[in-house]
Image (cartoon, rainbow, N blue to C red):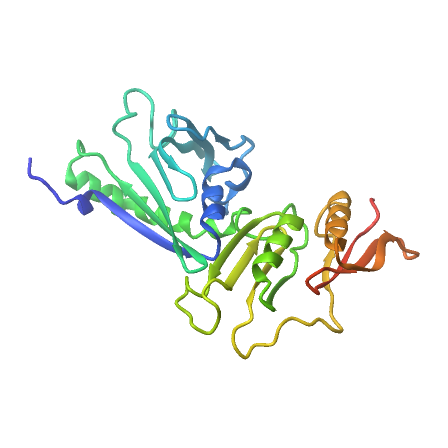
Length: 303
């Protein structure tokens, strides 16, 4: 049998996602955030997503093609490098591709590779078919729907709740960009401690910029339920000063969480109005934190 180049037995698709590598990796490996993989034109399957994230463990979820056809799919993990690389044998026992009945070593291998592209993430997905298949059969599989199917599936990764700032139907937190007076590292770490989430920091040196100190923050992003971004002000930029504006966190989380946020924002800050029940029935409060941001925090009474 003639040898064929590797690319004849595989294909690679790429996407650039406005998210951290951690968020994208979570979208692929946390069952809570894997709903993006389902066919959006079909009803949500009743069976839960199953993930056993270890080499030799499996990922399994039900795919609904139409009213008459559904099957499990997923994979068996072969390599796991958190936030960087995921390799799995694509398929499921009793599903498609079939991983039972001696097919475990002949199913396609899928590699998900993540790389930083500035503040975004490049996702490269490669599907490689085994050598026992004839090249004509491989090409028929690739061009007969496999590549197109993965292409459409990858378009949905950005909708994963691991990447979006919405959780459980709640309102997303404010998304603002703040110029700090040389305190961006401290400030953004402070907000990460208050709100949680994934924090990425890049220095002026990282970006090859000379309009700020090499170790100063040229770009920082907090991704999560509350999304914030900022940097140390470059030469000629005015630093933050909020007047006539508040950052609203009304209904962004459960009441207990909002009270916790309010208390943390108040440390070394200035409480304008305590978070408490108001005459109109809701509970809210205002605080200016230690870095000068003015927050409105509150929630409606329980139904």
